[in-house]
Image (tube, rainbow, N blue to C red; front, side, top):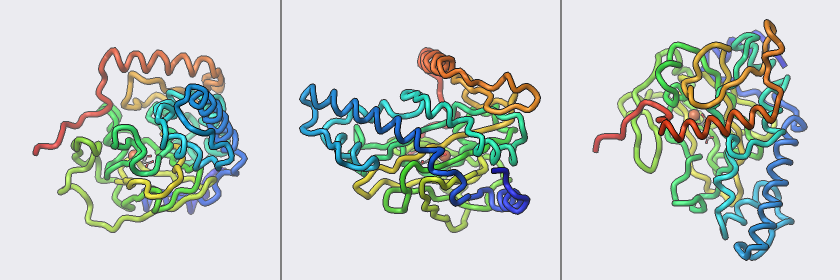
Length: 301
Ligand SMILES: O=C(O)CCC(=O)C(=O)O
Ligand SMILES: [Fe+2]
């Protein structure tokens, strides 16, 4: 649904807008189903190979992966959107209801940025090698692009596929801090890209518990983070980014594509095979270039 004038004003003032029940759960079910099916198949193959002791098939969606990973973590690296490349995930990227919300903030010519993730955030301690890419220290999404994207507006859309609560590391944001530009970040080994301490605004953080169907729209200059998952279930979520077609995404080696266009409707990418091909090519290119995803240097010790 298009945003109301009030919602647009709220986004402009606060730098974010949380829309409770912004999407019908039925819009997200196909994504959950394709992950559920994949995990089911992978559980069978791991079991057949003697790598897990049981299938855990009676367990709910947000628990089964944790139990499998407590025995074998092979599946973990196969789940993010660009590796998994599910058809329902691809179709959802141009979901009409979501595009209506996005259009209210960026206009009718919409490109989907390749800076996007499906995150299966495992209970603390279960992640391979101990560190977890889905535990994000304080950062702005403006900080995870190349500088070429700096002048342009990029909208983050964050949505859970299962309950996101403080205990499992839901999102925390610092509202009303957008409009001041890019803050200095650095890379903290083992932690990720983080805003340097003296640049962090002295404003209280807001913790945002969300349920499946809720949608968070966030300005790229809003600092946010998520803490580790202290629960026994998986925090499943997606974070997507949209911007006006023709503006640089700040990850030029990965594929962007048009998800809505009033000027040129035939430019919208609806071909699933082509999306797959673009990602296979982009991942290969990124690897060959040894492309740095963003501009920051390791913190000085
Ligand atoms: O999902 C998370 O925990 C962090 C995600 C994030 O930083 C983002 O969506 O921009
Ligand atoms: Fe982020």
